Image 1 (tube, rainbow, N blue to C red):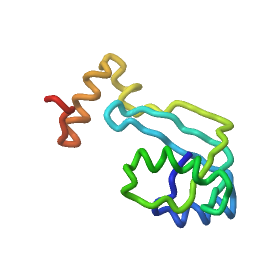
Image 2 (image 1 turned 180 degrees about the vertical axis):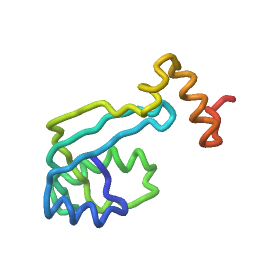
Image 3 (image 1 turned 60 degrees about the horizontal axis):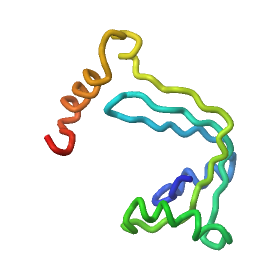
Length: 111
């Protein structure tokens, strides 16, 4: 489930062609998943909208209105790895995470 908060173009594109690819990336570990499948736009007048949007609203603390819910039926999934995993296989995830913290100028909570 994906919240349409400000994704008018994505909603239009899905209505034109429901085949989608969604990438989920942990920027600090520089890896994630590529999900491919078919999307459905669930509008506020759909009988399941309230139930499907409730957990998404909870994630945002209600700070943003959800215009639609985009439901994706995942048909294929593949890992995404940054080139550093191939070029520097000896580097640990802790090393990669520390580099990302420096690059983005952030620190983990508690430090």
